[in-house]
Image (tube, rainbow, N blue to C red):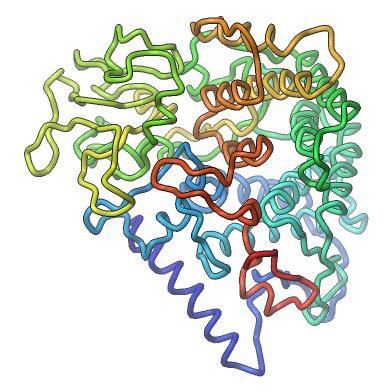
Amino acid sequence: MKNNNLKKQFLFATAMLMFAVSCTDLNISPTDSVFAGDSSGSFTGVTNPGAALNDLYNGIYGQIGNQANLFALNEVTTDELVVPTRGTDWGDNGVWRDLHAHNWSPIHSQVLDTWNALNQTIFNAGLIIDSRSAAAPQVVAEAKFLRAFAMFWVMDMYGQVPTRTPDEGPSVNPTVLSRAEAFAQVDKDLTEALAALPTTSSAGDTKRASKATANYLLAKLYLNKHIYLGNASADAADMTKVVNFVDAITADGFGLKTGYFDIFKPENNSETIWYAETGVGNRMWDGLHYFQGTPGNTGGGWNGFSTLADFYDKFEGSASSNALGSGQEERRGYVPSDGSHFGVGFGFLFGQQYNAQGVALTDRAGAPLVFTKDFPGLVGNNERHGIRMIKYHPENGEFANHEIVFRYADAYLMKAEAILRGGTSGETALGMVNNLRSVRSATALSSITEQSMLDERGRELYKEFWRRNDLIRFGKYADAWGLKEASEPFRALFPIPSTALLSNPNLTQNTGY
């Protein structure tokens, strides 16, 4: 499944580019920044705004649940995740290797697919927001939040955002917002949405937009403002805004939860600000071995996604074992050897793996299934190379429909970072980080620096979409790490897909591509 689909995506993207270059009478796909609409360019409103809003949520949920595209561009391109080729498995025409090594190009299939999906979300949200759709105030507010969510990612990842009004037909080239203009639009949508969004606590319906989701995204927006506007450092006033946005989330009843891996069960808890109703199978099975099956998935895992030794070593505990009693902090998890939890561990799966009877597993060739720290390279790997990571555990549902998108601990660390960067608060960055570490059964830090703040975010938020964003903000994204040489600074933005450039001359390719 994983190999064939990705090969088809790559070949389709390549074929589309070749077709566009060779033809003068170009018939552009509606997903290439030319959004579908009435051929006359007239628009009279969405017939059922509530149903359209549900479709909008479902589309975003699908993007979040995917192991490729939005997730991969923000995680596999970092020091946190790597998808090494194992024999011929996970080769996929090099799409995974190119992401990790920062070798992607404007025809990379996942760069294109992510661009198309997010931009289509922006356009569809605008149809609901338009006054001719006569949507209820809360429906409009939720659509504005979802438009802001999609536009945030396009701005963050590509640096420019094509926009089209409902009345502009396919013959009109979409207007392009600069990064600063997109920032202002996201800010405007979220600020306007706040008034009509419901106040939802952790006991409420957290799969829909609320005041807390808007405040979270505003905090993320302003924490990164200096990056988006090209300023050398964060403004203290903006950092104080981050503090205030997070305080508003706390006032709605959200807070840190004890029991780290319990947070990722498919149920309400004080940490879950917003979750997507989408299967979490990709978050567990993409790294588990073929023989690590459970009653609800006897076919086992897909044996792909892994982490790097340096990232594993950021956590407290033995460098050579993650068995119970190895001195590890709670967030690093453990590997059970007694058959408990279907034999599947939590967090980082390192060393010998076991089945549900406590019997040591082997790989398909009969060698002990011992997950190792190191790889020979991005290619030439066997079934056992690489530490695996899971947060969503199969004992809570092998394909449960509950993936966290916004989490309180992230907001909490955003506030601590904002204080470190000059924001005003009665709390201190060190005090906040150590409070979180105490909740997670980790040793207190004696001081806090930008590096230790980045490391703490990595320990808390691995596999939650934010590692690329964090590395860029802390100036580390271009650094060398396992299986990746130092890369050019322009890689902080992805390229505008080639087909999008051909379809819309208002777009310009990002520097370096």
